[in-house]
Image (tube, rainbow, N blue to C red; front, side, top):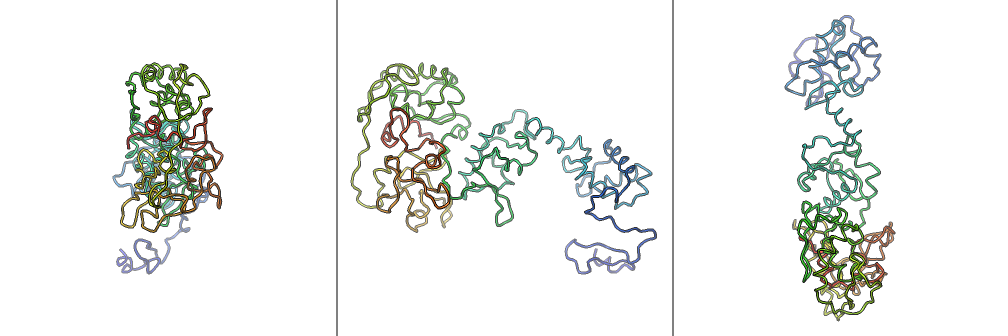
Length: 490
């Protein structure tokens, strides 16, 4: 094409030494009556056509009727050519001005829209459909019986789950919907939350302060946690999402999990944690255990009655646990209301350690902190593995990057005895090391629970003494009911 332009008399190439397709052919002598080119970035309507022409253009485009082109590259040319043939007034305009009119009607005036890559009247376009769905909170491009994210809490939990599965703790925004579809078997539609674009959804204040969209070195937008030093929150309560809505847990000795019919009587809120089915059994055996069962706090009266009917007979026949002495603050179970057998709790035994590589007694007594999909640290500390990969390309298999890469332990590593590396202990006296992360820049956490240090409330693995029985989590670390509540399959 460049050779043809250069060899044609009266035509020259602009710019003369352009590479690729960034050039145009220009006449050396303008034609008679030529008033100059229409600037492509001009948005002043009066400079392109008068008000009567714009009125006629609007009426013609609203009716539609132009032929559908097979190639979306020619979509503007097709509509401009149709306008030129549809009206004698349009024939007096140059083709360049008609092209600019079509572009303005598409990008500014909302007279034209897109459907399958082609230009259509705005009332038939995908833009109008998305706008209408955003105003009514309906999903877009979701099958009639398809599953999609419906609430803000579900959206935030889903993002946390996907971020925990990523190796670098980041998600590419352009692939976010595909991640939802493949990993969670559900669609993400921004119109459900009142937005027409995904970028506006991710910047909505209702999403909270946990997430941020950053621009990577490859000029791609990526979603990550806003605080890079913060420890990702526990996602154990997302087990129903991971297993497609089915709660899986191992029943403690002497008890059986309820049948699907009996489980259906539980309140939906109670099924929000992987341990809700066994929490009723724990409450039926001891009020001390019920005081630290998070699921027991969300049971409704109807769910409590159903739980009592299922578990009370087996709980009454279950043997007492002879493991120490902690007085119960109530003589009746907080869930079932029936007299509960007395339970004795004994603090975990502590022994001397032969070397620093052996997990400490306090570490061994800590409850599992890994999620339902992230494996535990191979050192036996009970922590989940660190995110990322080692130099050999394999994922980390310990909770400490230094352990996995062979560079030694960092000072917040849970793999070794904290007393030998100077790691701070939880100020609440639970016997565990402080959590990794920071409350604010320069201030480390002083508890094993971020919720305590941040003042946001306790999470499921907090060492704070909770409930009226005041039983710390470390004191019931060997309780079979405790592990049954937190050992969903992974």
